[in-house]
Length: 140
Image (tube, rainbow, N blue to C red; front, side, top):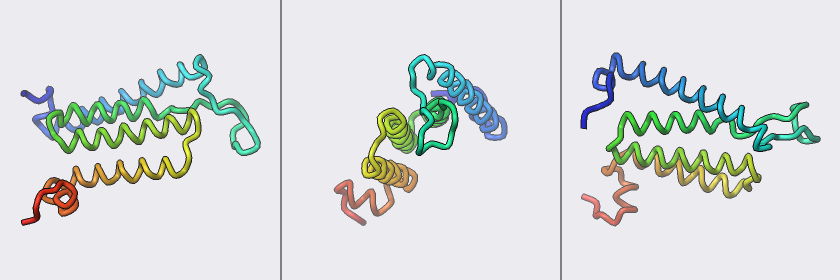
């Protein structure tokens, strides 16, 4: 499979993907903020709130979607990139759920710890002792 245009040359590819990801994230956040009032996904002012007017929730969704898409486009066949994207998606889903319904601290912490472990294991690679230990493969 041929890499997307510009990716094979790091001097050109990385800045282009960074700019593209930034623009995609900004566009996604802008679109989400335009949609939020219609959905009623707003944080209302109250005794435990610092804002004085209704504030949109979930604004990071467009940014997360752009970052995960860029990751998967840059390393589409890599197991590590798929694991990191899955961990990031899990964090985004629990964050969105927390904004929507209010997730408990225990649930958020559990998902964050699992996502961090998955990402760390993916970055460390199959030679890491944690991966060998948990995968059932014998140590050498």
